[in-house]
Length: 448
Image (cartoon, rainbow, N blue to C red; front, side, top):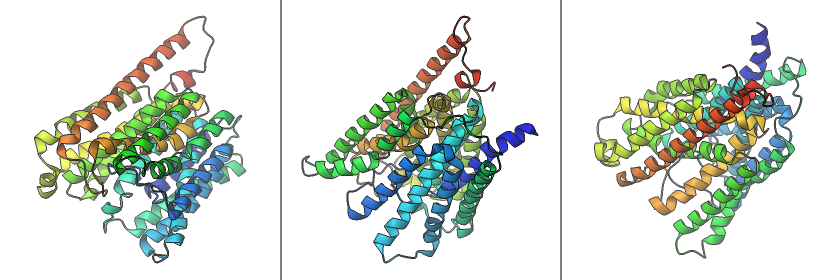
Protein backbone atom coordinates (compact mmCIF):
# COMPACT_ATOMS: atom_id res chain seq x y z
CA UNK A 1 0.00 0.00 0.00
CA UNK A 2 2.91 2.36 0.67
CA UNK A 3 4.11 1.82 -2.91
CA UNK A 4 0.62 2.56 -4.26
CA UNK A 5 0.35 5.73 -2.20
CA UNK A 6 3.82 6.85 -3.20
CA UNK A 7 3.63 6.19 -6.93
CA UNK A 8 -0.11 6.47 -7.51
CA UNK A 9 0.13 10.26 -7.43
CA UNK A 10 3.43 10.69 -9.26
CA UNK A 11 2.71 8.02 -11.93
CA UNK A 12 -1.05 7.57 -12.07
CA UNK A 13 -2.10 11.22 -12.19
CA UNK A 14 0.29 12.17 -15.04
CA UNK A 15 -0.68 9.04 -16.96
CA UNK A 16 -4.33 10.03 -16.63
CA UNK A 17 -3.54 13.57 -17.79
CA UNK A 18 -1.78 12.14 -20.86
CA UNK A 19 -5.13 10.79 -22.09
CA UNK A 20 -5.99 14.34 -23.17
CA UNK A 21 -3.31 13.94 -25.86
CA UNK A 22 -5.47 11.38 -27.63
CA UNK A 23 -7.24 14.47 -28.96
CA UNK A 24 -4.35 15.44 -31.24
CA UNK A 25 -3.93 19.18 -31.60
CA UNK A 26 -4.76 20.92 -34.86
CA UNK A 27 -2.55 23.83 -33.87
CA UNK A 28 0.51 22.32 -35.50
CA UNK A 29 1.01 20.14 -38.59
CA UNK A 30 -0.11 16.55 -38.01
CA UNK A 31 2.70 14.92 -36.09
CA UNK A 32 2.37 11.81 -38.20
CA UNK A 33 2.34 12.39 -41.93
CA UNK A 34 4.14 11.46 -45.12
CA UNK A 35 2.93 14.66 -46.75
CA UNK A 36 5.43 17.33 -45.84
CA UNK A 37 5.56 19.80 -43.01
CA UNK A 38 2.45 21.85 -43.68
CA UNK A 39 4.15 24.84 -42.04
CA UNK A 40 3.82 28.12 -43.87
CA UNK A 41 4.78 31.72 -43.18
CA UNK A 42 1.52 33.67 -43.03
CA UNK A 43 -0.37 35.81 -40.53
CA UNK A 44 -2.44 32.99 -39.08
CA UNK A 45 0.55 30.67 -38.68
CA UNK A 46 2.37 33.33 -36.67
CA UNK A 47 -0.16 32.74 -33.91
CA UNK A 48 -0.14 28.97 -34.43
CA UNK A 49 3.64 28.84 -34.09
CA UNK A 50 4.20 31.52 -31.45
CA UNK A 51 1.69 30.50 -28.78
CA UNK A 52 2.78 26.83 -28.44
CA UNK A 53 6.43 27.95 -28.48
CA UNK A 54 5.73 30.33 -25.60
CA UNK A 55 3.98 27.50 -23.73
CA UNK A 56 7.03 25.28 -24.18
CA UNK A 57 9.32 27.95 -22.76
CA UNK A 58 7.02 28.57 -19.78
CA UNK A 59 6.70 24.85 -19.13
CA UNK A 60 10.44 24.20 -19.21
CA UNK A 61 11.29 27.05 -16.86
CA UNK A 62 8.56 26.00 -14.40
CA UNK A 63 9.01 22.23 -14.74
CA UNK A 64 9.21 21.81 -10.96
CA UNK A 65 5.51 22.76 -10.81
CA UNK A 66 4.48 20.02 -13.21
CA UNK A 67 1.08 19.32 -11.56
CA UNK A 68 -0.04 22.85 -12.45
CA UNK A 69 1.30 22.42 -15.98
CA UNK A 70 -0.89 19.32 -16.36
CA UNK A 71 -4.10 20.97 -15.23
CA UNK A 72 -3.42 24.11 -17.30
CA UNK A 73 -2.65 22.05 -20.39
CA UNK A 74 -5.72 19.86 -20.04
CA UNK A 75 -7.93 22.92 -19.56
CA UNK A 76 -6.45 24.53 -22.69
CA UNK A 77 -7.43 21.46 -24.74
CA UNK A 78 -11.15 21.74 -23.90
CA UNK A 79 -12.07 24.63 -26.29
CA UNK A 80 -10.32 22.87 -29.17
CA UNK A 81 -12.21 19.64 -28.50
CA UNK A 82 -15.51 21.50 -28.34
CA UNK A 83 -14.77 23.30 -31.61
CA UNK A 84 -14.00 20.03 -33.43
CA UNK A 85 -17.70 19.12 -33.04
CA UNK A 86 -19.55 22.41 -32.69
CA UNK A 87 -17.51 24.39 -35.29
CA UNK A 88 -18.08 27.82 -33.79
CA UNK A 89 -15.94 30.61 -35.29
CA UNK A 90 -16.11 28.70 -38.59
CA UNK A 91 -16.38 32.00 -40.47
CA UNK A 92 -13.58 33.69 -38.53
CA UNK A 93 -10.19 32.19 -39.40
CA UNK A 94 -8.37 34.52 -37.02
CA UNK A 95 -10.41 33.41 -34.01
CA UNK A 96 -10.08 29.81 -35.12
CA UNK A 97 -6.29 30.15 -35.32
CA UNK A 98 -6.22 31.48 -31.76
CA UNK A 99 -8.32 28.55 -30.59
CA UNK A 100 -6.01 26.05 -32.30
CA UNK A 101 -2.98 27.85 -30.90
CA UNK A 102 -4.35 27.54 -27.37
CA UNK A 103 -4.91 23.83 -28.01
CA UNK A 104 -1.33 23.50 -29.19
CA UNK A 105 -0.15 25.26 -26.05
CA UNK A 106 -2.19 22.80 -23.99
CA UNK A 107 -0.51 19.89 -25.76
CA UNK A 108 2.93 21.37 -25.03
CA UNK A 109 2.16 21.88 -21.34
CA UNK A 110 0.84 18.33 -20.92
CA UNK A 111 3.86 16.82 -22.66
CA UNK A 112 6.31 18.80 -20.54
CA UNK A 113 4.32 18.15 -17.36
CA UNK A 114 4.17 14.39 -17.85
CA UNK A 115 7.84 14.15 -18.84
CA UNK A 116 8.78 16.26 -15.81
CA UNK A 117 6.92 13.82 -13.59
CA UNK A 118 8.68 10.91 -15.32
CA UNK A 119 12.04 12.55 -14.61
CA UNK A 120 11.38 12.35 -10.87
CA UNK A 121 10.58 8.62 -10.82
CA UNK A 122 13.03 5.77 -10.62
CA UNK A 123 14.35 4.77 -14.02
CA UNK A 124 11.97 1.87 -14.72
CA UNK A 125 8.76 3.67 -13.82
CA UNK A 126 9.95 6.93 -15.35
CA UNK A 127 10.88 5.21 -18.60
CA UNK A 128 7.48 3.53 -18.80
CA UNK A 129 5.68 6.83 -18.21
CA UNK A 130 7.79 8.66 -20.81
CA UNK A 131 7.22 5.90 -23.34
CA UNK A 132 3.49 5.92 -22.66
CA UNK A 133 3.39 9.68 -23.18
CA UNK A 134 5.05 9.53 -26.61
CA UNK A 135 2.89 6.54 -27.52
CA UNK A 136 -0.25 8.48 -26.56
CA UNK A 137 0.79 11.36 -28.84
CA UNK A 138 1.35 8.90 -31.67
CA UNK A 139 -1.95 7.14 -31.03
CA UNK A 140 -3.87 10.40 -31.04
CA UNK A 141 -2.10 11.68 -34.14
CA UNK A 142 -2.80 8.46 -36.01
CA UNK A 143 -6.31 7.41 -35.08
CA UNK A 144 -7.85 10.77 -34.20
CA UNK A 145 -5.53 13.48 -35.42
CA UNK A 146 -5.42 13.16 -39.20
CA UNK A 147 -8.22 15.35 -40.60
CA UNK A 148 -8.98 12.98 -43.47
CA UNK A 149 -9.64 10.17 -40.98
CA UNK A 150 -12.48 12.01 -39.24
CA UNK A 151 -15.36 9.55 -39.32
CA UNK A 152 -18.77 9.31 -37.64
CA UNK A 153 -17.19 6.90 -35.13
CA UNK A 154 -15.26 9.83 -33.65
CA UNK A 155 -18.03 10.89 -31.29
CA UNK A 156 -18.16 13.96 -29.12
CA UNK A 157 -18.51 11.67 -26.12
CA UNK A 158 -15.19 9.98 -26.92
CA UNK A 159 -13.34 13.26 -27.43
CA UNK A 160 -14.83 14.94 -24.39
CA UNK A 161 -14.19 11.80 -22.37
CA UNK A 162 -10.47 11.96 -23.13
CA UNK A 163 -10.41 15.68 -22.39
CA UNK A 164 -12.23 15.34 -19.07
CA UNK A 165 -10.06 12.42 -17.96
CA UNK A 166 -6.99 14.50 -18.78
CA UNK A 167 -8.35 17.39 -16.76
CA UNK A 168 -9.11 15.02 -13.88
CA UNK A 169 -5.52 13.74 -13.98
CA UNK A 170 -4.18 17.28 -13.78
CA UNK A 171 -6.54 18.16 -10.94
CA UNK A 172 -5.47 15.06 -9.00
CA UNK A 173 -1.81 15.96 -9.49
CA UNK A 174 -2.44 19.49 -8.16
CA UNK A 175 -4.40 18.10 -5.21
CA UNK A 176 -1.59 15.67 -4.46
CA UNK A 177 0.97 18.47 -4.54
CA UNK A 178 -1.09 20.75 -2.28
CA UNK A 179 -1.71 18.01 0.28
CA UNK A 180 1.83 16.66 0.29
CA UNK A 181 0.95 13.35 -1.38
CA UNK A 182 3.24 14.27 -4.27
CA UNK A 183 6.76 14.53 -2.80
CA UNK A 184 8.63 17.72 -3.59
CA UNK A 185 11.57 17.29 -5.93
CA UNK A 186 15.05 18.03 -4.65
CA UNK A 187 15.78 19.81 -7.93
CA UNK A 188 13.81 20.85 -10.99
CA UNK A 189 13.31 18.10 -13.61
CA UNK A 190 14.85 20.42 -16.24
CA UNK A 191 18.28 21.85 -15.60
CA UNK A 192 19.06 25.47 -16.39
CA UNK A 193 21.20 24.59 -19.40
CA UNK A 194 18.56 22.21 -20.71
CA UNK A 195 15.86 24.86 -20.24
CA UNK A 196 17.85 27.33 -22.35
CA UNK A 197 18.36 24.75 -25.09
CA UNK A 198 14.72 23.70 -24.92
CA UNK A 199 13.58 27.31 -25.30
CA UNK A 200 15.60 27.58 -28.50
CA UNK A 201 14.25 24.19 -29.63
CA UNK A 202 10.70 25.50 -29.24
CA UNK A 203 11.46 27.93 -32.06
CA UNK A 204 12.41 25.19 -34.56
CA UNK A 205 8.93 24.98 -36.24
CA UNK A 206 8.95 28.76 -36.68
CA UNK A 207 12.51 28.62 -38.02
CA UNK A 208 11.41 26.01 -40.56
CA UNK A 209 8.55 28.22 -41.75
CA UNK A 210 10.69 31.36 -42.00
CA UNK A 211 13.58 29.57 -43.73
CA UNK A 212 11.22 27.98 -46.23
CA UNK A 213 9.67 31.38 -46.96
CA UNK A 214 13.06 33.04 -47.46
CA UNK A 215 14.48 30.25 -49.63
CA UNK A 216 11.45 30.00 -51.90
CA UNK A 217 12.46 32.87 -54.23
CA UNK A 218 16.12 31.76 -54.21
CA UNK A 219 15.92 28.04 -55.01
CA UNK A 220 14.45 26.80 -58.30
CA UNK A 221 11.47 24.86 -56.97
CA UNK A 222 9.33 24.77 -53.80
CA UNK A 223 10.47 21.26 -53.00
CA UNK A 224 14.11 22.38 -52.84
CA UNK A 225 13.22 25.37 -50.68
CA UNK A 226 11.41 23.10 -48.26
CA UNK A 227 14.33 20.67 -48.24
CA UNK A 228 16.85 23.46 -47.64
CA UNK A 229 14.79 24.64 -44.69
CA UNK A 230 14.65 21.06 -43.43
CA UNK A 231 18.44 20.73 -43.58
CA UNK A 232 18.83 23.93 -41.58
CA UNK A 233 16.36 22.88 -38.88
CA UNK A 234 17.79 19.37 -38.69
CA UNK A 235 21.29 20.72 -38.13
CA UNK A 236 20.00 23.08 -35.45
CA UNK A 237 18.04 20.32 -33.69
CA UNK A 238 20.93 17.85 -33.69
CA UNK A 239 23.30 20.60 -32.57
CA UNK A 240 21.06 21.50 -29.65
CA UNK A 241 20.76 17.84 -28.67
CA UNK A 242 24.52 17.36 -28.89
CA UNK A 243 25.12 20.21 -26.43
CA UNK A 244 23.06 18.20 -23.94
CA UNK A 245 25.20 15.14 -24.58
CA UNK A 246 22.09 13.43 -25.99
CA UNK A 247 22.51 13.77 -29.75
CA UNK A 248 22.39 10.02 -30.44
CA UNK A 249 19.32 9.38 -28.30
CA UNK A 250 17.44 12.42 -29.54
CA UNK A 251 18.17 11.54 -33.18
CA UNK A 252 17.08 7.95 -32.65
CA UNK A 253 13.78 8.89 -31.00
CA UNK A 254 13.03 11.42 -33.73
CA UNK A 255 13.92 9.04 -36.55
CA UNK A 256 11.74 6.22 -35.20
CA UNK A 257 8.75 8.52 -34.72
CA UNK A 258 9.22 9.89 -38.24
CA UNK A 259 9.85 6.50 -39.86
CA UNK A 260 6.59 4.87 -38.69
CA UNK A 261 4.52 7.44 -40.64
CA UNK A 262 4.40 5.46 -43.88
CA UNK A 263 3.86 2.02 -42.26
CA UNK A 264 0.92 3.37 -40.27
CA UNK A 265 -0.59 4.99 -43.34
CA UNK A 266 -0.06 1.70 -45.17
CA UNK A 267 -2.03 -0.01 -42.40
CA UNK A 268 -4.80 2.53 -42.93
CA UNK A 269 -4.91 1.54 -46.59
CA UNK A 270 -5.02 -2.14 -45.61
CA UNK A 271 -8.19 -1.47 -43.59
CA UNK A 272 -9.82 0.57 -46.40
CA UNK A 273 -10.31 3.37 -43.86
CA UNK A 274 -12.07 1.21 -41.23
CA UNK A 275 -9.87 2.39 -38.39
CA UNK A 276 -12.10 1.23 -35.58
CA UNK A 277 -10.98 -2.34 -36.27
CA UNK A 278 -7.34 -1.60 -35.39
CA UNK A 279 -7.98 0.26 -32.13
CA UNK A 280 -7.47 -2.88 -30.00
CA UNK A 281 -4.16 -3.70 -31.66
CA UNK A 282 -3.01 -0.06 -31.35
CA UNK A 283 -3.77 -0.03 -27.63
CA UNK A 284 -2.13 -3.46 -27.26
CA UNK A 285 1.06 -2.18 -28.91
CA UNK A 286 1.09 0.83 -26.60
CA UNK A 287 0.55 -1.31 -23.49
CA UNK A 288 3.25 -3.79 -24.49
CA UNK A 289 5.66 -0.92 -25.10
CA UNK A 290 4.92 0.54 -21.67
CA UNK A 291 5.26 -2.79 -19.85
CA UNK A 292 8.50 -3.75 -21.59
CA UNK A 293 9.70 -0.16 -21.20
CA UNK A 294 10.10 -0.82 -17.48
CA UNK A 295 12.71 -3.46 -18.22
CA UNK A 296 16.12 -3.50 -19.84
CA UNK A 297 14.56 -5.30 -22.81
CA UNK A 298 12.92 -2.11 -24.09
CA UNK A 299 15.73 -1.53 -26.57
CA UNK A 300 15.44 -5.10 -27.86
CA UNK A 301 11.70 -4.62 -28.46
CA UNK A 302 12.26 -1.28 -30.20
CA UNK A 303 15.03 -2.59 -32.47
CA UNK A 304 13.15 -5.78 -33.33
CA UNK A 305 9.93 -3.93 -34.12
CA UNK A 306 11.76 -1.42 -36.35
CA UNK A 307 13.51 -4.26 -38.19
CA UNK A 308 10.25 -6.12 -38.84
CA UNK A 309 8.44 -2.95 -39.96
CA UNK A 310 11.36 -2.10 -42.26
CA UNK A 311 11.25 -5.56 -43.80
CA UNK A 312 7.52 -5.13 -44.35
CA UNK A 313 8.04 -1.83 -46.14
CA UNK A 314 10.81 -3.31 -48.28
CA UNK A 315 8.47 -6.03 -49.53
CA UNK A 316 5.14 -4.15 -49.49
CA UNK A 317 5.33 -2.82 -53.04
CA UNK A 318 6.31 -6.03 -54.85
CA UNK A 319 3.93 -8.17 -52.76
CA UNK A 320 0.79 -6.02 -52.67
CA UNK A 321 1.08 -3.92 -55.83
CA UNK A 322 0.04 -0.29 -56.04
CA UNK A 323 -1.71 1.56 -53.24
CA UNK A 324 -4.68 2.17 -55.49
CA UNK A 325 -5.13 -1.59 -55.79
CA UNK A 326 -4.81 -2.00 -52.04
CA UNK A 327 -7.35 0.70 -51.33
CA UNK A 328 -9.88 -0.73 -53.77
CA UNK A 329 -9.38 -4.36 -52.85
CA UNK A 330 -10.56 -6.43 -49.92
CA UNK A 331 -9.49 -5.07 -46.51
CA UNK A 332 -6.46 -6.82 -45.03
CA UNK A 333 -7.18 -6.46 -41.34
CA UNK A 334 -4.58 -8.87 -39.95
CA UNK A 335 -1.58 -7.19 -41.64
CA UNK A 336 -3.00 -3.82 -40.61
CA UNK A 337 -3.37 -4.86 -36.98
CA UNK A 338 0.16 -6.28 -36.86
CA UNK A 339 1.65 -3.13 -38.43
CA UNK A 340 -0.21 -0.78 -36.10
CA UNK A 341 0.77 -2.78 -33.01
CA UNK A 342 4.42 -2.93 -34.05
CA UNK A 343 4.57 0.80 -34.80
CA UNK A 344 3.07 1.74 -31.43
CA UNK A 345 5.36 -0.70 -29.62
CA UNK A 346 8.45 0.58 -31.49
CA UNK A 347 7.82 4.25 -30.69
CA UNK A 348 6.86 3.60 -27.07
CA UNK A 349 9.80 1.29 -26.40
CA UNK A 350 12.24 3.70 -28.08
CA UNK A 351 11.12 6.56 -25.86
CA UNK A 352 11.43 4.30 -22.81
CA UNK A 353 14.91 3.24 -23.94
CA UNK A 354 16.30 6.77 -24.13
CA UNK A 355 14.43 8.14 -21.09
CA UNK A 356 16.68 7.05 -18.16
CA UNK A 357 19.81 8.67 -19.57
CA UNK A 358 17.91 11.86 -20.41
CA UNK A 359 16.37 12.00 -16.93
CA UNK A 360 19.81 11.71 -15.37
CA UNK A 361 20.92 14.68 -17.46
CA UNK A 362 17.77 16.61 -16.42
CA UNK A 363 16.87 16.94 -20.11
CA UNK A 364 14.00 14.47 -20.58
CA UNK A 365 11.22 17.07 -21.15
CA UNK A 366 13.47 18.90 -23.63
CA UNK A 367 14.56 15.97 -25.80
CA UNK A 368 11.23 14.11 -25.92
CA UNK A 369 9.36 17.41 -26.16
CA UNK A 370 10.37 20.31 -28.44
CA UNK A 371 13.51 18.65 -29.83
CA UNK A 372 11.60 15.52 -30.83
CA UNK A 373 8.98 17.55 -32.69
CA UNK A 374 11.63 19.69 -34.38
CA UNK A 375 13.47 16.59 -35.59
CA UNK A 376 10.31 15.05 -37.02
CA UNK A 377 9.38 18.26 -38.84
CA UNK A 378 12.85 18.65 -40.37
CA UNK A 379 12.97 15.02 -41.51
CA UNK A 380 9.59 15.42 -43.18
CA UNK A 381 10.90 18.48 -45.01
CA UNK A 382 13.96 16.54 -46.16
CA UNK A 383 11.74 13.78 -47.50
CA UNK A 384 10.29 16.08 -50.15
CA UNK A 385 13.38 16.11 -52.35
CA UNK A 386 13.21 12.32 -52.63
CA UNK A 387 9.46 11.74 -52.74
CA UNK A 388 8.48 14.91 -54.67
CA UNK A 389 4.76 14.57 -54.24
CA UNK A 390 2.39 17.34 -53.32
CA UNK A 391 1.08 15.46 -50.32
CA UNK A 392 -2.54 16.25 -49.64
CA UNK A 393 -2.28 14.13 -46.52
CA UNK A 394 -4.35 11.33 -48.00
CA UNK A 395 -1.81 9.13 -49.72
CA UNK A 396 1.55 7.44 -49.43
CA UNK A 397 4.41 7.84 -51.84
CA UNK A 398 4.31 5.53 -54.85
CA UNK A 399 4.94 1.86 -54.20
CA UNK A 400 8.41 2.14 -55.73
CA UNK A 401 9.44 4.46 -52.90
CA UNK A 402 8.65 2.14 -50.00
CA UNK A 403 12.33 1.21 -50.03
CA UNK A 404 13.07 4.72 -48.79
CA UNK A 405 11.03 4.10 -45.64
CA UNK A 406 12.65 0.69 -45.24
CA UNK A 407 16.03 2.48 -45.28
CA UNK A 408 14.91 4.95 -42.58
CA UNK A 409 13.78 2.05 -40.39
CA UNK A 410 17.01 0.17 -41.03
CA UNK A 411 19.02 3.19 -39.86
CA UNK A 412 16.79 3.45 -36.78
CA UNK A 413 17.46 -0.22 -35.99
CA UNK A 414 21.23 0.33 -36.22
CA UNK A 415 21.03 3.36 -33.93
CA UNK A 416 19.00 1.39 -31.37
CA UNK A 417 21.55 -1.44 -31.41
CA UNK A 418 24.29 1.16 -30.87
CA UNK A 419 22.44 2.53 -27.85
CA UNK A 420 22.05 -1.01 -26.49
CA UNK A 421 25.81 -1.59 -26.78
CA UNK A 422 26.62 1.72 -25.10
CA UNK A 423 24.17 1.05 -22.25
CA UNK A 424 25.58 -2.43 -21.72
CA UNK A 425 29.09 -1.00 -21.57
CA UNK A 426 27.93 1.64 -19.06
CA UNK A 427 26.35 -1.01 -16.84
CA UNK A 428 29.51 -3.10 -16.86
CA UNK A 429 31.65 -0.10 -16.03
CA UNK A 430 29.35 0.90 -13.18
CA UNK A 431 29.39 -2.65 -11.79
CA UNK A 432 33.17 -3.07 -11.94
CA UNK A 433 34.97 -2.80 -8.56
CA UNK A 434 36.78 0.42 -7.84
CA UNK A 435 34.52 2.60 -9.98
CA UNK A 436 32.58 5.38 -8.32
CA UNK A 437 29.21 4.03 -7.28
CA UNK A 438 26.26 5.21 -9.29
CA UNK A 439 22.66 4.77 -8.40
CA UNK A 440 21.62 1.52 -10.11
CA UNK A 441 18.25 2.90 -11.13
CA UNK A 442 19.94 5.64 -13.12
CA UNK A 443 22.33 3.34 -14.96
CA UNK A 444 20.59 0.08 -15.68
CA UNK A 445 17.07 0.94 -14.72
CA UNK A 446 15.12 -0.12 -11.72
CA UNK A 447 15.84 -3.65 -10.75
CA UNK A 448 13.54 -3.91 -13.16
